[in-house]
Length: 448
Image (cartoon, rainbow, N blue to C red):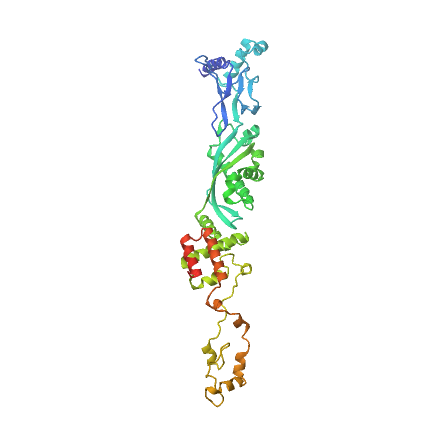
């Protein structure tokens, strides 16, 4: 009974497989690399092709859409690759009574009987197996990547290693379909997608290795905040890596096309480092080596804040006299930077030392002779030679004393006070002092 059933199955299978097939590509989603062919069994309700899925007859038509490549697989492997779009007639399948060339060569009866006899030995099945699959040649986009842990980035601007998390996508494209099928797609697979966890895991891990090496090479010239704008350079660096992602084209027939960095996020520790650096950058010392003008502006701001909070006080004249608010450089100031002149000794202090005050004139009747005579001896006292102490008092005063004046002893000179008011006006114009503060300080300086 089995042989009889096999004979009927063989004859029925031969007749069903006589139909020519119309084959085209199936559905491709965004990440599909390989998709199986689709046999058109009917059209608008017409047609009854019930042939086997793995049998191709002579005269069948294979339509290759744009952006795809067709592979014909046989029991021996890849039989043919069609990479140009268009319609192609297949001539290496089983003979059919609907093909004029087969009928002319073998005749109707011989075609059917020979195929049926061959199938009986295989319990009604054909020993032939032909399958068609299509490879996606378009750019496969939106493959997401992300660092599982912190990524060290040596930022030359901050001068330290910063830990960041990087997220984004990359895209690949098949440039060698045959190599892809032979080396990347599993054996006997007519459908394969990069959504497959094993396929994506291999590509993502190798990409991250090359990505890390690429951004570290850019750290000497690119700040970490500029990385999202350097995606083209990063992609070039990744492709140039001869160990990981850069080897995909030679190994799998895949080429990395683009890299898109969506976000670079600091770890909490690195965020605190950057915030602290930014705060210190606003101080005076952070401007060293940048420009003298920037350092002077920062110094003036700090001094003005101190004046605003504490006032000028008794040291106001000395503060502006030293020209601190204008540039902290006494060599550029026209106002003396020293303290007040030495005070002139008073008459009382000179008498206590046994000396006559300089420039003082004795009153009539106060100068007595050696014998302590009455006022009539005033003329004699004028003729007496001065004593040693008197001679010392008559000598010219030291330079520091002669240069002293009542105005220097009492406070800044008028010119100094005017200069102070000018500096206050500069702080007012710069917005550091308010109008009320300026008016109050001006009255203090001018003594109004």
